[in-house]
Length: 90
Image 1: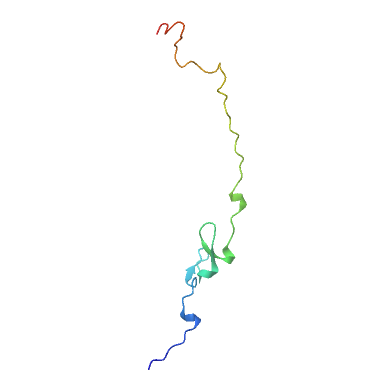
Image 2: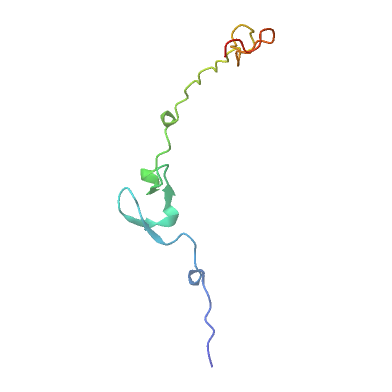
């Protein structure tokens, strides 16, 4: 007769318990003890650093300049045609 084995908590797969390498120190650590840093390096809490605010400078945008093209005198005639005289010497 076969004896039934009782299951404990160690018989099941626990996520994030695998080993990984700390990218800064090169030591073998558990995956659950690591974080991903801003430069995509997987590190422990001792080597973790947040992104600095100086990495995102706020620069003012220059104002857009709009040229007024609605004035009558600034536009050149597209063709030299004059309705009173015709095409003149073209």
